[in-house]
Length: 239
Image 1 (cartoon, helix red, strand yellow):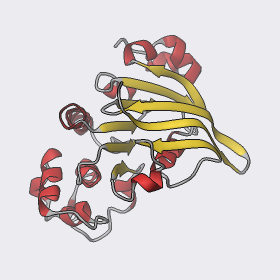
Image 2 (cartoon, rainbow, N blue to C red):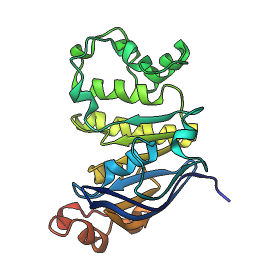
Image 3 (cartoon, one colour):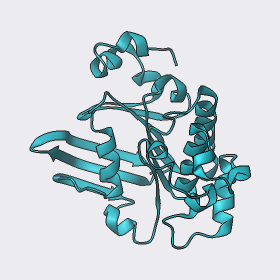
Image 4 (cartoon, rainbow, N blue to C red):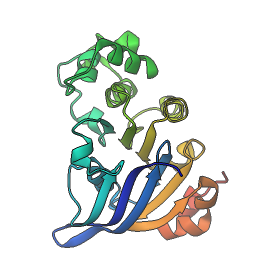
């Protein structure tokens, strides 16, 4: 049987007594590449924060390899790219190399060099974040997320503010990390058409799990209309 990397059992989470997530049951196998889609306010970012242990469910259980997130993180790392992070702190006066090693106690030079090489930005290591384009900054933050080669990588809108070429390149790199390094990847995105051929599973989320399965089955009009009733006609494509 496949090993479960991430498990959520009957998870509920609320803000000001209003449920943002309700009765979430989800099992993400090791080496899975899961794409999460849903309208604004669907609870996608909240779901990632629950997996990371940044917040705790008001009901239910979140497990990482059978452990509570806070226990797993005592000895392991989960790679994480927050939403819009490259646009909020890019004025911070540090180099790309300093960014990649920031926040890690046990990171070594070969970790940094490997991560920079993966995202093809080794030549930028001594550059200040201020000198980079939006796509280059995003790659720098992605390099930081994978620097310790985590078993799990959580990405919240990783292609925001980058050009179409860089977007395609990032998704190709993520596919390689999943297939060749065995990293379990969970990516929240609105770029459905771009990543539909990369992931092996898609979850539609709108406070509850609307549907979960292979892209070929999920990205059909019946599910899109459930998730985006007003815009479904613009999102549908054959996969």
